Image (cartoon, rainbow, N blue to C red; front, side):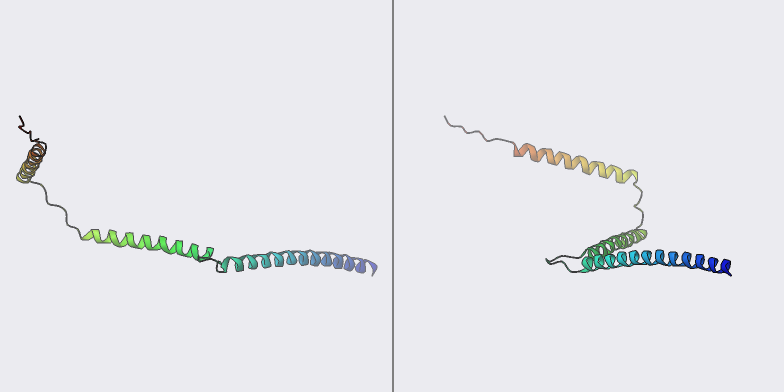
Length: 123
């Protein structure tokens, strides 16, 4: 009978110690929770000046990135409708070379005319 009572007292002491430890842990968690709630409320409050809250800023940043990706995907999808450029033939290469030489000659003539100086014949 005394042995059973001592075992029960030991179990009761152990259970009460565990309960007290859990109560302390619960109080600490409750304090952390209240601190987090206060921090969240301050972060969600509208700034006194014109501006955005940190949460709104993060949301806008994520939307911006998402819209960038969507725009890029749309632009790239339109390139699939492009047709390849035609191959250059010997004739088109010759015409292009001739046009380039003509443009260079014309530019040189215009520069030469622009740099001619008129001399006066005062005697």
